[in-house]
Length: 388
Image 1 (cartoon, rainbow, N blue to C red):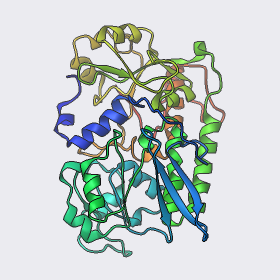
Image 2: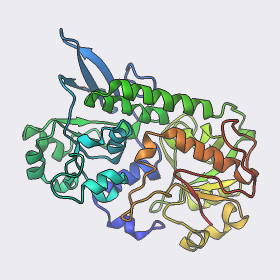
Image 3: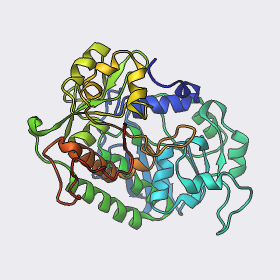
Image 4: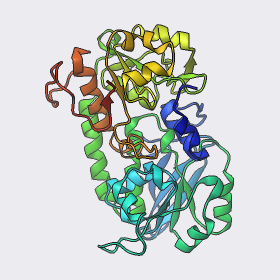
């Protein structure tokens, strides 16, 4: 086991989320459906009008079965429970975080306003109410949820089966909407869920405008050349248990890296599904690497080198190549804002990666919209830092 032990002390739902989002950085799920939606990028939700009164409705689409769960909205929702940090980020992005009444695992939420509201009793200045921590899937505080009487509980799943806590919530009369933003492969598909949160809270025009800004900025920054010879070779991740996961070429993380002018070494072509390589295979890949990205919990080159006897021989460590991690903004308990606010601001993540790949004269790709970065300068980053 090469990852730090504090990860293993986290609740089961945090381990599952880490497995889905950080280690796989894409998907280990072979999606069988090809849903059609009106969204520009997202495949697992839709917004439409229904009924003779043409009421707004949001539709959550299962990537496993294609089943569509429709929520008709006769008014803006003002009392929402979020089981995922990306849902918190989506609501906060459109200024709707005041509707959040409870979260699952406040320790892993990065949003400072939500954390502050979790530490007070009653109401804060401005009339905002306390945010409660309703626990995790296996030990939810059902009594608290019923007292809150939420308009909706937003949650997620990592399999096609309906989890026991979702079944129980529904049996108690609590409306649940299961979202699958974490399984979307395109970075802008995940960001597009801002529009869903806008529909839920009566902020559709604002959400549409914000998403248009984010998507336009992302597309203007994205690298266009497909010539791999011009790209920065990226060694990604560290072993998780006994397996070194590398996301497929069409995955969320690989697409971000490619759009920044890089190429994930060892990525399986034509799929978003992660593959695994042995330590020996990772060592061979490392010899081609211009940079090592996202090496788990390690914050210094010394820590990384001490994690395994073979790591000092890996190309970036041995040859003094740069190493960057996406854990610049973390909570004391281990939450990571890369997966929270970063999920709705892929343009900022992309800009980080462009700056990183341009730093130290790594690659030829640049952008006229970015400041020129000299080899001696330290790039100004939102979600990443250099491991020194």
